[in-house]
Image 1 (cartoon, rainbow, N blue to C red):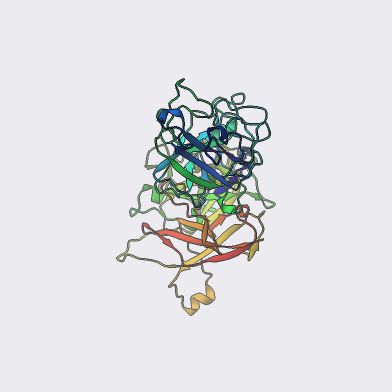
Image 2 (cartoon, helix red, strand yellow; image 1 turned 90 degrees about the vertical axis):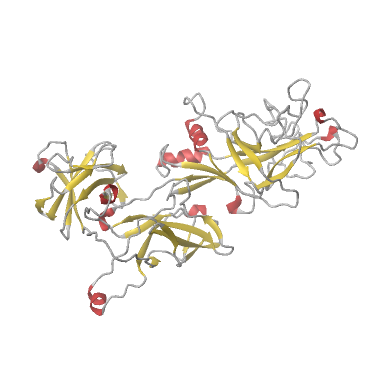
Length: 534
């Protein structure tokens, strides 16, 4: 699983807009929209009661801002449990979804996403048209008050100066997606009393940039009444941008933080290539894994800690036989790009801890042997081989590389071998693929005597869509940010991936599709694998 979503648990809209009638004495500064199913931000310039505000400096400026908060405690719990990677290994994206409406939609504008620096209350208001649900001194944030007990330190919300994200909208109807990794990591550190550089989680505000919020020049150089002093503002209107709120009936349109990371494991035991001059340095490198399952659970080896080495020896037979030495085995060492003979410790390869109960070793091997046996050891460097503890002996079949006189364009047949017809939202299945080339046509002898091995695709990706409307719930994670968050893992049994069914809504059918990166291009496969979430 390399994607996890955390849905907003509080949101509201605050505004200083005029109520119907456009009277200066009827601004909606006390209104609350905490339970509305949409969120709205706008900037209106020069709209006033007939005969009023002919002077641009006199204050006919109306603004609306969005406040939204996410369950950082859930993100922290996921990290503590190990289901979310450590800082630096995961990116957090804030996502909001455009809500269509019959009013004017601005074009070519920018929205700011800024961390809120003061606690606030969501409230229970609903009315976004006439602003009839007022909090006054009651529960819920508005333009003046952050809560029933406290006013905003600055009218319209109080925000930190950093980190600030600015999101551009060319046509106006786009969704909002922005990387807020730095801010989420600050929230996870907590307030200043917990860690230097941390921030207490009060959520974020979403509103137009200062150059696009309405112009107003106060004679005092400060906020006048409910109107913000903004001499850099726009003398035009941007009305109105709406997003779906956390209370929306549309499950996948609710605002959320999406954690993305590359969790793929590339275990070359079933895809091991012997070193060849036809391949570059990194292509010659292979990685094999050891998985220590104890009663169905991955458990760390007792004598090997997270920072201790594990050693691997390569042999011609399961009982030992001849050992491959520095004449044919290379480690990747240092920060350079070269493979160096750096085995030591009686020609053993040095590997290490990857995750709970999981260890790996990377090396290049030059051999024509049909089978190579890998033996995993613990101990200290320089210890005699006979004194090392042997944990496990495995095997792999090296593949010989050869050039070709044709440019192949393979097509594949794919099947999920363990897909169930339905799942519940508490399941996180590990789904395994069987892949073979489409035009593979064995003779009768091969059919009768040979077990067909699955084809391993080194760069395979999944997406998931809802069948009723073809909505992409999770898209292929192959974007320009190169997070590869939907890339499939592989081991000796083929490609596989984990998926958290809690991200899907009950009562619908969904489908998996796959895209394989082959010969420098992505090829979406024709097969669709459907299931239902109950």
